[in-house]
Image 1 (spheres, rainbow, N blue to C red):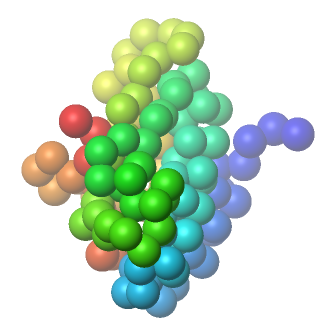
Image 2 (image 1 turned 90 degrees about the horizontal axis):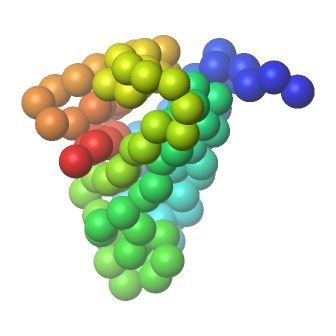
Length: 112
C-alpha cells in the first residue's frame, strides 16, 4: 500500500488536537506516536529518521524524564537533496520552521 502523506498529516492533527500531553506517561506515548508518523513520512522520501537525545530517553524510560522537543537524526538512504526533502516532508505535514526547530502548535522537532 503506498504511503499517504495526507493521512499522515491527519494522524498528526489528531495526535495534537489537544496539544502536547502534560502527564509523563501520556507525553512519552504521544512523542513515540509522533516519531512513528515522522519516521514513515521520511522513509517514504528515502530518508531514515532516528529519535535521539532526551526524546529517546523519554520514550524508553517513560515517567523518568520528559523532553521539551523531539530530536531526530536524519540520513539519506537513497537520492540526493536531503535538505530539500526534509523541508518538503515537514512542510507537507504542517510544520513551520522557527530557527533550529520545526514547530506545529506546541510540538517542537529539532534536526541537529
